[in-house]
Length: 85
Image (tube, rainbow, N blue to C red; front, side, top):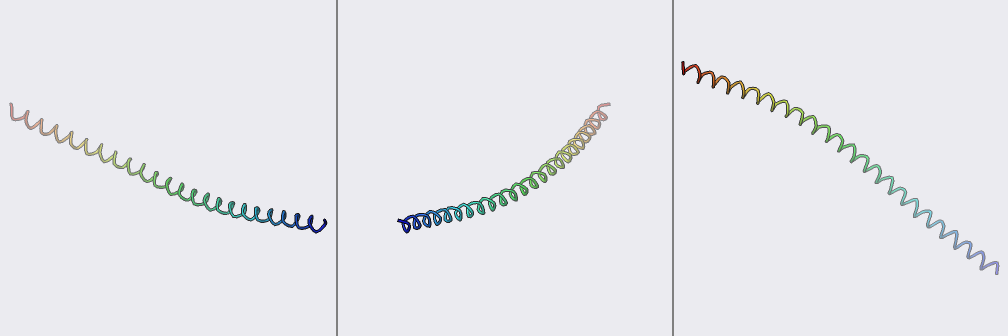
């Protein structure tokens, strides 16, 4: 009877160790996934920051081009008006 109890306890201990090892592996994989996700998040934030900066620069260039175009159109209108007198 003691031998059966010992085998049962040993089997239970072995099963517990297997589950602990499996849990350990899962925790390691989860940590790797977290690290990977954190890196991806950092890269995406950097990319977003660059895109926001590029957008701001393009808006400034667009406004400058609009201003130059308005000035050019105004000069053309002035030339047209000058010829009417």
